[in-house]
Length: 516
Image 1 (cartoon, rainbow, N blue to C red):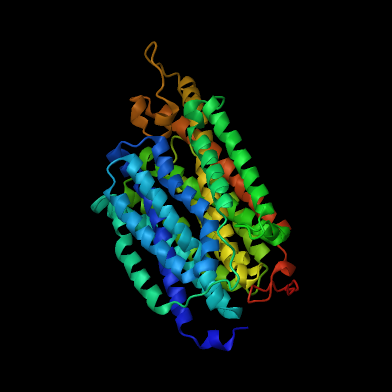
Image 2: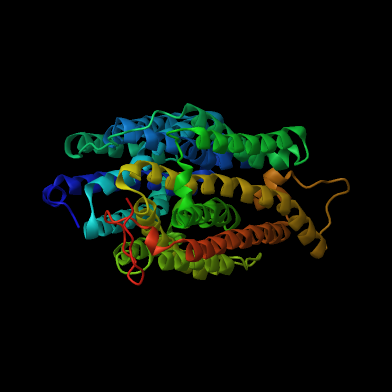
C-alpha cells in the first residue's frame, strides 16, 4: 500500500518519466548500434573482433561498474549518481561520433558504459523509492513497455539515420535527450539514499573488473591467438583466480559491494540467472543476426531495421502486459514462460541454409519477441522485490550486472564458437559442392570469414553462404540451450515467500512472507 506522502507527491510521475527517458536512450543506443555495425566496419576498416568490442566494450565497463555505482548511489544519493551517469553518457556519445578509428570508438564506448552503469544501477532504485503497492506494478509495467519501445524503434531509427545521415548520427542523437533528462532530473526528481551507507569497496571493484575483463578478452582473442597459447591460458586462469579472490574479498568485508548474503535467497539467485540467460542468448545473438541480414542477405540498414520489427514490436506489447500481470500471476511463471519462448524461438531460427530469406527467421522472431517482453518487467520487479527497500540500489546493480555480463560473455563466447566453426563449415560446403580452388589457395582467416562477406570467395558464393549459415545455426542452438536453462532455473528457484512486503509483486497463488 502506498504511503500518503508518496501517493500525494506528483513528482513521483516525473521520476518515472525521466527514468523511462534515460532507459529509452540507453537501449535505443544499443539497438541502433547493432544496425550500424556493418557501416562502421566499412568506414573504419574494423575487423570482426573490433565489431565485437563495439558492443563488448560498453557491456564490459557497464557490468564492471554497476555494483560500485549502486553502492555509491546508496551512499551519496541516487539522484546525484543518476545525473552524473547521464552527463558522462552524453559526453561519451559525442566522443563516439567524433571517433575516426576502431580504437577511439571502442574506448569511447567503454566510457559510455561507465555512465550507463550509474544510470542502470539507480533507475530501478529511484522507482522503488517513489512507488509502492499497485502503483509500483504500474510503474514497472510502463518502464518495461519503454524498454520494449526502445528495442522496437531502435533498428528502424538506426536504419534511417545510418542510411540517410551517417553512422555517427546514432551517437549524436543522444545529446539533446541527455541534456533534457539532466535538466528535468535536477528540477523534479527527489533525492533518496541509504541512511546507513557502506564505504566504497575498492578491493571488490578492482578484482571484479579485472577478472571480468580478462575473461571477455580471453574469449574474444582465443581463436586468433590459439586456445592453447600462453596468453589465452593465462588470461582465462587469471580471470578465474581474480573472480575467486573477489568472492573471498566480499565474504571478508563488513559492508561489501556485493552482499553474498543476497544469494541465500533462491529467488535472488533465480532472477540473476534469468537476467544472465536472457542477455547471453537472444541479445547476444543480435550482432550475428544483423551480420546475416546485411552482409549475407544484402539488406541496407533501414531494410534490416524494418525486418527486426516483428521481434521488437511484440516485445513492446508483451512488456506492457507483463508489467500488469506481475501483481496477479507468479513471476516465476512469467519468467519461465518468457525464457522458454525465447529458447523455442531461437531453435526455430536455426534451420537456415543458402536459400533462406529473412522470413525463415520470422516464426522465431515472433516467439522471442513475446518472450523478451514477458521477462523484462518481471525481472525488474523481482530484483527489487526480494530485498529490503534500503538495499534496492545494490539489488538493482547486481541484476543489471548479470544482464551486462550475459551480453559481454555471450557475444564473446558465441563469437569464439562461431569463428572456430565457420572455416570448417565453409570448407565442408566447398567439398560437398565439388568446388575447386586454385592449387595452393587458402581460405581467408576465420575472422574475415566470420564477417559474412560472400565476396571473399568470389564465384563460390553459394558454398560460402551454406557454410556461414551452418555456423550461425550452431550458435543459435547453443543460445537456445542457454535460454531454456534459464527458464528451468526460474521455475525451480523463484518462490513467492522470498518477496518482502514493501510493494513487491504478490504472487497470487502463493503466500507473501514479510521479512524484517
